[in-house]
Image (cartoon, rainbow, N blue to C red; front, side, top):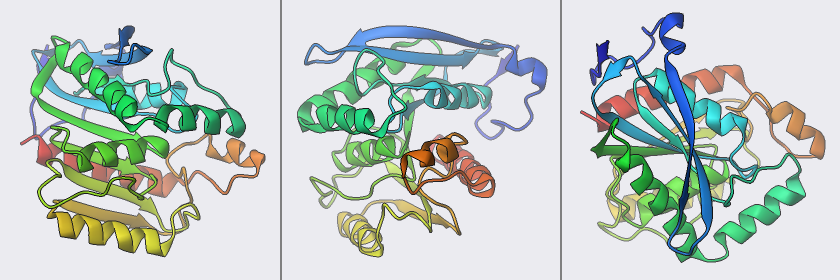
Length: 261
């Protein structure tokens, strides 16, 4: 059996250890009564509680990609939960459906926050989670979600946004951001303008947030998802980039080690 060691999460796990990753679906509800389905992953070869990481899905919903990232995090030694922001674990491969799901989920900001908070409490309640050490990562739509939760002062050690929307319906205010922030942005992301980036950095600086902004050359929107090239067939300006995916994942690992020290 291994113990969780903050400075040694990672890269050293063998293929045999990956076979010890356990997963299960967890059903729960948000304060507005919405039934939610989470996907929980952990390495049962590690003894005792370890930091927890929430994974917030892309606008496609809680699909295999979000679940794979939860397993990846479990392989790094974390207690990981891919959360459900749409309800009932819904997901799709069609942009029109994804847009409808996203708009419904964000139409009421309080309900969206309640779904995130219900997921946070679910992860904290797992025996293998150290409830004092929780972070959240998000992709695309999920990247915006984790940034918005940080803006609203949700008690997280850190958040990582991968190719997320940077705009804020309710901008951060001085002292409101408690979590440390890492933004992983593709320089060729046509969904995020130079003005969006400048406004985000100004917002964070005015709020006194502890943030860092990493850009990856040539990377388009959804650069971390190998399925992005297939989805581009719907006329979306998105694409996978292996180098940016690997660099941003390594940057995330270093960031999480720091915030969980």
